[in-house]
Length: 126
Image (cartoon, rainbow, N blue to C red):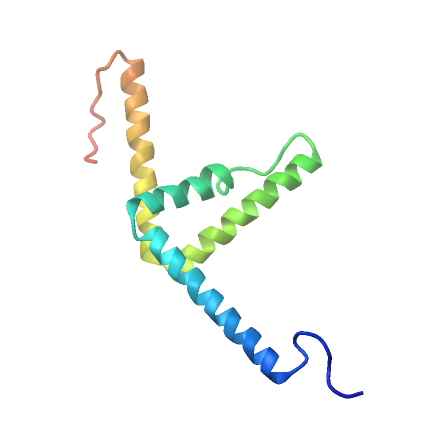
């Protein structure tokens, strides 16, 4: 039994694979930094993890297949959220604050529209 055959059989092939993986990881980190550096990117990121992935909702559905599907979506959102929290904590915090502000503004606008347009002051400075 000699050398392994195949794409990773030689030391130089293994070294090349390690270099490509490091480059991919660095590119992924740079892409995340670019996305979260801008308010538009943070809004997109938050919509992705919240609405599309359902990260903050329940996975429970009427049937086990639906629950499994929802949990799969949610696990992607959790992975994206954790990655941002670990690699870009300040940008993640900014995305969270902006999402909360947007949610409060939308709730206030909905309430104002339902009340005939008059806004009530709740005593909080926003």
